[in-house]
Image 1 (cartoon, rainbow, N blue to C red):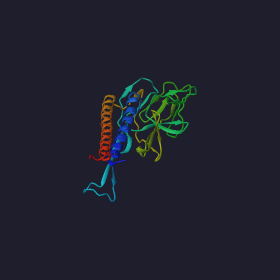
Image 2 (image 1 turned 60 degrees about the vertical axis):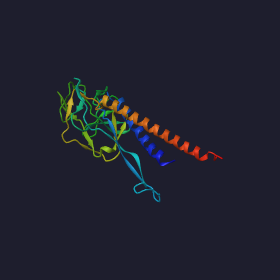
Image 3 (image 1 turned 90 degrees about the vertical axis):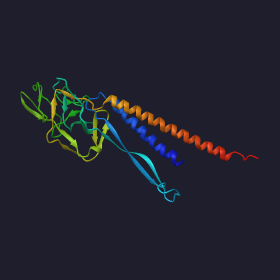
Length: 248
């Protein structure tokens, strides 16, 4: 395969990845606490040793998807009036216990199970600062949750909700639409969490902007596809001319 085609294919793969990321963002434009993903592109320089080329022509510049990261901007926070709906007005994550281990989330729509355990919509228990599930007694009516995550009722303090931040945000791995696993590096408690009771943080995806970006990505994908087709036709024309029998 010639250099022109391989360079174009590297761009084609990068554009396909970009469209996949934008499609996921658009699909989660209404998912509470969802944070949009972004792609960082870069150049991959391939030195062609021994290549006979003009000065500067012995390096091939490919397009490279260097990283996919999450936009850390906070989504719009809307009041719900539900005492177990929680939002964070600063960076940080709630922690929940899943079958696969502790996971992070900003989707703050919590509920009570029959035994009083506070869980997310998937039944994962909300954890306290000691990494234990938070549970309300039948007498713990009208719970009050302060900005630092402390839960109390008429019977006294129940516990404090853990709010943490990953030590290395690049190690966050999405699981579904609302959970994040920390691959390595661990987490650190947020020194001054800002928990808002009776509110939900919306997705930080701007649907119009993402849709416009998707259209631009599609146009670039189509342009590169046309370039590959044109290059293939050019090569075929050259082969046909070289293979044509000599004219008498």
